[in-house]
Image 1 (cartoon, rainbow, N blue to C red):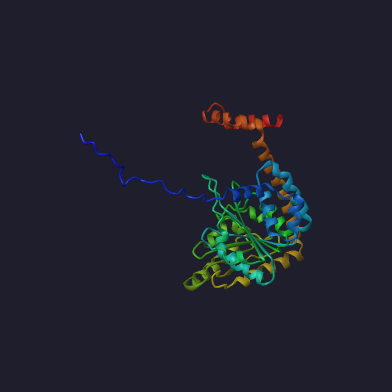
Image 2 (image 1 turned 135 degrees about the vertical axis):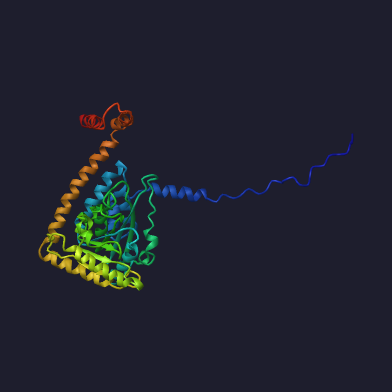
Length: 362
């Protein structure tokens, strides 16, 4: 056997320098400390009334919260803002996906800020029924409007709310009005005939369409078209101008199938192009004509009274639902009752009655 001294291989790995921390623990501690400092309702209201966008955003976040501990604070903020609200024009804009809602709203919003108006855009993105997440990418689409100092864009997730709007859109309108925004634009989810809840919170309801998306048969559908105060055929540019004009004629024919509106207003159909700005000013002129007519015949003010009553009842329904599912005893019974229903041990109706009786007894 060889007695040669064994030398370590030159290929062995030497310990290197450890990578530095990419996150500063000091910065993390600072952020956590800042997040714990929650402004009081009074401070939020003062900021909102002063036109502070940060205070407005935090106020909306508080209002949208589902945390029961935030409810009293949110109500305090809303009640303090109510006397300063109600002075804006509320415009609801809807249409199928791909109709160009975001592009239209950016062009329309820039036109309004050019007239000296303060515009708040409340956009609603659909929430996934699987992950419960939402993209909230409308600010990305409105690159120019988001930089306008007279504009405020707030995206919200629809959550489990049906009707094309978010759960707290109505309260958000109040905060924006109190902050000095005189024109509120609500962009709905855009899913079609079912999204009609927005009609109960706006003064003017605008339906965006594109050529090839409907004909006179649409007049039979007593849903979203019947509620529209104006129908605008978007993307009327380039080779699409002729098709847009034909669509305008078709929708005009469809409108004659609807009953006369209580407002006395006859819906107007027009064409526009958000890319070329063609027809954008005509849309605003139509809204001004509508407001003039409905304020003169008092319909504008009566409608707002009806809307306030409607949202009172909706709030009661919402609060009862939240209280029911947050009740400790209901939470304990719910899982076992669900399993019993799945196993056909009890009918869904009997199970619901059992839970309701338990809740109301407590």
